[in-house]
Length: 170
Image 1 (tube, rainbow, N blue to C red):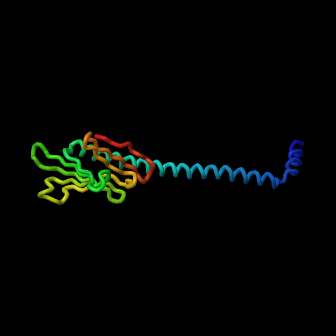
Image 2 (image 1 turned 180 degrees about the horizontal axis):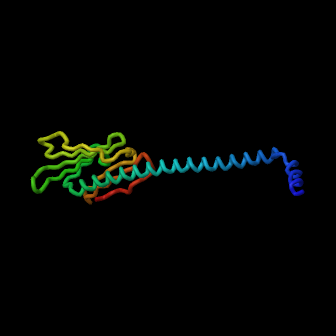
Image 3 (image 1 turned 45 degrees about the vertical axis):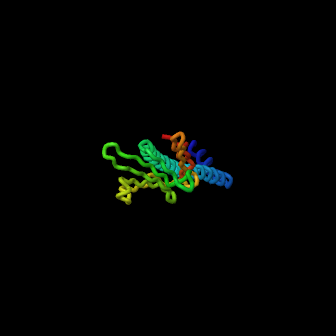
């Protein structure tokens, strides 16, 4: 008897109504859209974080080399026409060997190049040439030398992100 009543109940239910199907598709679409947006945001955030870390590492490397050379420099010679730009030449004499060391920083396109010379008068070619930083914004980068205070100030700005480094004074 119970089985007979269950058959009567099931006979009256033939499927979903059109409204139920439309609601199910709409809810599925909203959930799928949210999941897709979340995935794209995660990938975009990862890319921005990676670009930021690259920029920070480039700036840290530049600061390391500039501060190292500036601490040893006995003579600082900024560019002749514009004293607030490149090339920047740092010179010092080694106490033990009396060799003259000279480091020249130039900005080429978006790269900061460091040329290291030993006794440049006798050997005009650089002993070591390296790019100490890439992705440098030429418009946001400057160096200046205050002769009276003996203060070298560098401002470096990267292209790949909006990271700005405060002026550095060794």
